Amino acid sequence: VALGGTEGVPKGPPAIDTSLRYGVTAKRIPEFLVGPSKKEVLTASWLWHSESESEALAEEEERFWYVAATRARDKLMICGLLKISGESGDEIPPPGESFLGMIREAENGDDGWVRCLPVEDGAARIPGRQASGILQDPARMLCPKAVSPAKLARLSASAYAMFSWCPAAYRIAYRQGRTMQWMARPGEGSGGSEFGSLAHWVLSKWDFSPGTLDEWLPEEKKHAESALKKVPYGVRGEFRSAASRNEIRRMLLGYAMSDEGRLLSLLASGKYHGKLSRETPFRVNDGDLLMVGSTDIFWEEGEHIDLRDWKTTSEEDAPAAYYEEQLRFYAYAMHVYRREKGLPEKTIRIGINYLRSPERERIRAEMSPEMISETGRDVHRAAVSALLDFFEARPERCPVCPWRDICSKKHI
Image (tube, rainbow, N blue to C red; front, side, top):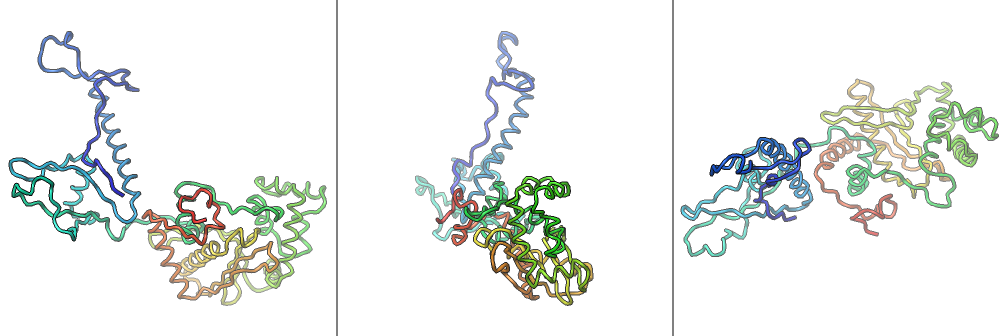
């Protein structure tokens, strides 16, 4: 990216201007009011207005250059005109309030933010001055500091997963504020965010026994009306749909018949040695980074901790690669929490349950100490990279990306 005209300075308000505070302001007092004095007399209202307006214009100019400069990816070329003294041949410093002036001041400082390197091609000459005998300094390239000390102070599991899945998608979701939602494809029956929220609510309350599922998802309408009062307000509309209740009941009954479902039923009833935790929010500090999120379900059994994530859509619509990164984040946060609390070290196993799919199980992985350490490095690296503005696209993610139609870097 090349930025031109960087030697310019913000202009002040015109001689006659409108002001929210002072109404219409004029710079000079008319001559017929001050007499034939040769010295112009400025009005107090214009001076006050000029002071506040000039400050606002300078701040706006600084924001403009900041936005322009942060568009650069590999190199930022700052182009501006410098004046040379006709007598001494020395460079006349640019105005301090200009962007070029700010850069030159940073260049002379010792804060390490700007480094000046000689261009390999040699000295850059000013046309028309070669015959003057004045030697010019080598052209200089301004490079940003190689490693930025800045990083996010807070990183959520979903933000980390999105950045790992595709940095360009992270930019759309977390820099531009677009809603993140994996949309169910037509022909799959019930779906959408409220459907998933209702299923997650049932899973947070149900004891995983097939015989008790009707208490939470009644088939008959009259029983559904009486059960409605214990349903959260945000998903009551979805709960009133018999089709949605039947679809969730079908998925959960299938899961209850699996080996994992039977184990969770024993844990929920207290008939099996182990600890079951559901819908658990967390805030874990790891050095200078706060990790936040909320796990769907995990349980402790012997020397293992099993972490699971529920998905009510198919794997094609809720990509496993994204949710696997989210689970790795959960596992690392749990590892850090247990380490800080002095709890016994246990092996963490992660998994995704696609309740709609016949197989119902995806991504079963055991987090080894090496994987835990690698995830920690990835988490802290993401907290730094998320501020660097290098949002590379992952073309292989485009077919299932929810923003594939609006992304400027799309590859489909």
